[in-house]
Length: 278
Image (tube, rainbow, N blue to C red; front, side):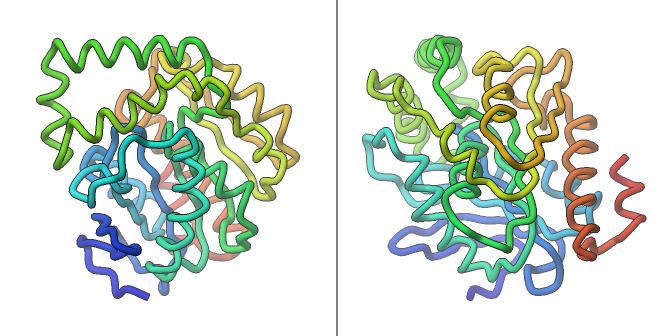
């Protein structure tokens, strides 16, 4: 087990993954593990992890997957099952390396899909619940259309320069994600069957104006899941609720985490933290 500093690198096999650890360590309190989007990184979470730690009293661990941020490069091209590999091969080793004992997985977009695959594919009693922000369970036409459009934006606008501030090798980061989603074989990607095997409460936070997915994703979860599913639909919000509607997203995610952790007598700040969240 690694002794976690406020920031640093985790050695996972031959890869070095950058991370931040906010608040108490996994040995001292529950841990909320944040899994970023398809073009995300540690830095692109902004102050959301810090505010979430303050609102819950839990530790918040956030890391950049290989090929993102300042982490080691990823092997390209990514295969269609790259999210399964992250969920079933890499994430268990990350949780082991940080000494994870109990807490929640909180994922955004690709990270939400990874969290769902893990929760439905790995029997892990340490996971008390999962929060899925703008998740993908199947590929929709709107997803492919928007991802094709962002490719053109990357080639013709200042998007590349903006992303380069957050990624060591921005071209590899972009191609690794964009090429995989635009691969014709990816249209058959479907993780709905994993949802039936999730045995902990699920929260879905979705922007009503999400340009990468529709409310069909929520309908799939409500149909497939046997576990409780809490849904939060945010008006006038697109694909990044934590940036477009930060207050409402923080309140919803913190309330869900506090409720589950208090149910196990594990919230570090008890009712004070719960009050802060709402």
